[in-house]
Image (tube, rainbow, N blue to C red):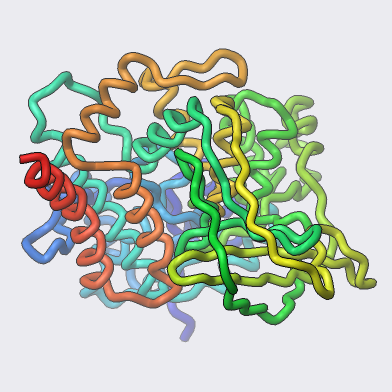
Length: 456
């Protein structure tokens, strides 16, 4: 006999779309029917919960058979409002609630709310990968640890926003100053300097020239697209010129009404999200607004291509060139010469404290913008925006100072970001991930102690 199947989701528009697509029982659930207690973790940094909605908890505990969580394909960010479309912590909550019950919790990420896409996603629902569970828990606990560190400072009461917003605050502050980049040139082929995580390096001061030989490793060509579709959101926001708060609202509505694939990626890393593209919608009940149609028309195109990546290494210094060729072998970008002398180049860049400057910076770090993290800075008046110009407000400057006092530097947030992104790449255990994050958080404090000792 086939097991009973119940579809859970935490959004009314998504629930309606599912009901039109499949005959199963559909339950709309509270996204926070259980939540982290205070402080939210034990001595081993394992999550500790409290019930926030007993009725919803009892309703879920009574489920048996297959319980399919049908949700947007995104991991929870550092902080989400209770009604956020992109908060999938409900997935973790359901798994914890039913862990000792006769029920199988499955995950059906919904890349699109087109009828066929919903049916296919639910039919292919599968058990959660361990790294997915680890990532959800690690993000929430990391957020709690950072909040506790900030709460211990007796200063002006400032709204908590999440570590991604704090990292963006540092980035926006850096846009108002000049920076330098370093490149290796082989004729017309340019290799940018990168860090160990693959992000381009921006030097605050003129870097020295490197001399000597480089060890070169060329990765096997892979079939890809040009331009890189991972960063289509960044390019769409640049090309359209639509204010970010308006683009966020339009794209949320576009997904919920079935007009585009899931539009938000957590950073630039693929956690199962599809590429951002318009899907079209023949449903007369969900007409596309002219404003939305105009925005989606500006989605950048791409073409099939072959991508060749080279890494150049000298001691601890890394450089990378990325070249694209069409299927016919024609160079599309950054062609590799047959032979050419190696030259080191340094380039000075003027300040660019604009929305486009921020998006360029994120793309260089192989990150897609987290619009909610940015918009929290704007709504809480930590940054000022005039047209496309960005600047820290006086409140934002005070908070940046507060982060410094808590030994939470830009480098600390960057390392945490990369650690959380790469969980699924090395299949780390939860304890390994949290150990790395705690060591990173403590690193800032140790550096501060060393500087104080040297000054004395």
